[in-house]
Image (cartoon, rainbow, N blue to C red):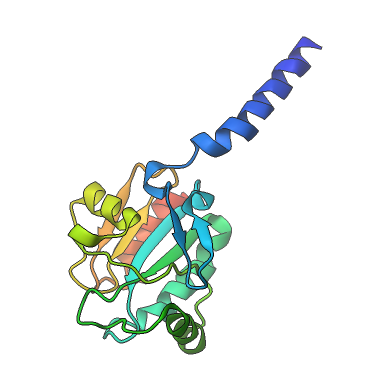
Length: 182
């Protein structure tokens, strides 16, 4: 009977306390998605996350296709891509949230989560990008900068716009964080 109580107590502690305590500080934000729905980024706790600042009218825009493929290939292993549209560089994301959503879905079949348009520049960055910049010391210099966040939020790696989502460098780091053999 005593061992059953201990087991039940541990299970309750993990269920109740674990869900709240498990959210890494870097994901502890609520943001709106392109539909205007508030998303608690803590829902991605325990997953490897690739945060990407996106734009619809950029030379790197075709990376949407690779990002979606990456998301689909590894989502069952605890991985997600999250897009953060920004009009910070070259005014290459001029559309409304609805226009961005339609563009991404129609042209690239994007199904990964996309947050509402916001800034990713150092002084005006949305809260998660402000933390990503602080964690890596790397500020996006253009669209499609990528930040790979470990499951516990303790490790963050940055990749420039020219780094393809299919690059060996990014894939090797992703597989290491997912504990998948290369």
